[in-house]
Image (cartoon, rainbow, N blue to C red):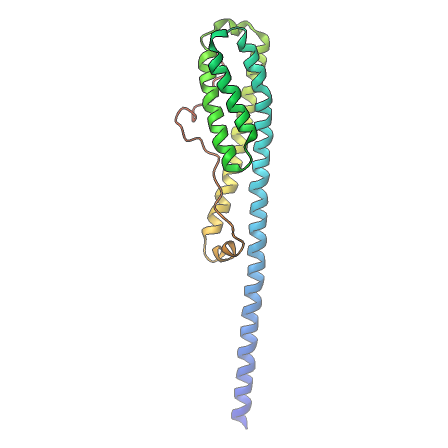
Length: 195
């Protein structure tokens, strides 16, 4: 009889331990899922902040182009390339499309600035100088929000690949997110707005 009680008690203890382990795993899974939701919210918010500065940049570019048109009439192709790149960047929807389109816009702006450097009389144009200052401020803020976005994406990307959280990430169908990087060495340079 004591042997039967001992077996029953052991079975009860084993069931209790298994139940406890399952509860711990369930709580961990819920916490891991909530952590992924929080991380997603962070990088999405960071990307929305980038969108705000990109819109400011997009709004400023036509004013710059119009100001330069009066001085650089024979540079119409370069000016049109900037306008076209701006339109493509504004039309981009996904983060990957926006990253690629803005890389092209940065390249077009680099060429635009090379054209502007050929016209020293623009230095005397106070409207152009004001627009330059605004663009420089926007580019600085854009660099800061890109840095924050990339930091949140890095944290997210590391978390979805780290075991055992990667199990929950697979269950949630989470994928690695793109960084907002500049791939071209020309693009890695600051946008020159001072002459």
